[in-house]
Image (spheres, rainbow, N blue to C red):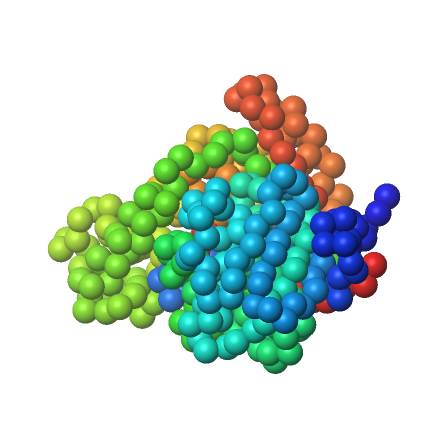
Length: 389
Ligand code: GLA
């Protein structure tokens, strides 16, 4: 079977009738701890995982960009650098995959960084809409290809920042920076503790004895942009109550002192964010110390907080957490991951329990919900790079 790089190169030749200059890849990601903390200028602990967007690319010198992907084989997209908003076809819709690419080049143009165009053929094995951030992987693979082929000498962090700005300005998506950063700068077998206030980050080794399992519930969040935005506004309202821009520097004791002056649900949203920030730093320490029992407890606390205080879980997600917890006890941890209202749970469990966890999910989840869960056995991989075959 051919590798993703070979598939991308073949698609490139078939489409453009010539060889690509090079191939680049960027991984999807999973968040181990720190949910809804990034836009509150807090801490997150994601890891890049072994599913990738791969791009075969060739530099052009006429300012034109042309793109194809094996996911939508009938589509051929092109645009002129700096004129990203002047395209008039199906790809005009803001959610079209090509907008992630156009957002990136539009942001480069607005930053005054001039580039001369590129042809790209894209293949991907990152599951779409399963919470692996396939869109960030696409942007970062594309940005890495541009950076390298046009010799812009941008750091991986700068590529991540351009990608996030592209989403914000071009697509009006108000996401945090976590997904772009982890896809751009992760290291092999490491999670990354990111401080979203100053974008400082530290790689954290994942214990060798733990397996990384992601289980998608088969439930998809409805109207997620609206729900996400509501949570963001609620957090901002509490921050403003304290005269601050974000919840980052509000302490739990200060929140408790103000409890009677806050609406009950606003108080709970803030309690989640403030306690989750602390848990995220503690989880990083627990991983470094190989302290699985502590990690187990922190992940359980995080899930409870997401369920009861931030109120973004669903009965199906809670059921998955219960099924997995029953198998692992304190020999691993499990929690909801991502924006919530559907989606996946992430589990870190001792290797010898992996088969039991998979079996329990397969047997019990379907029996109780009639829904087939998707189980992914993952490893933590490095961030975006140029690749050979
Ligand atoms: C989505 C966003 C992230 C983050 C999570 C919640 O995945 O893209 O930036 O806010 O939700 O932790």
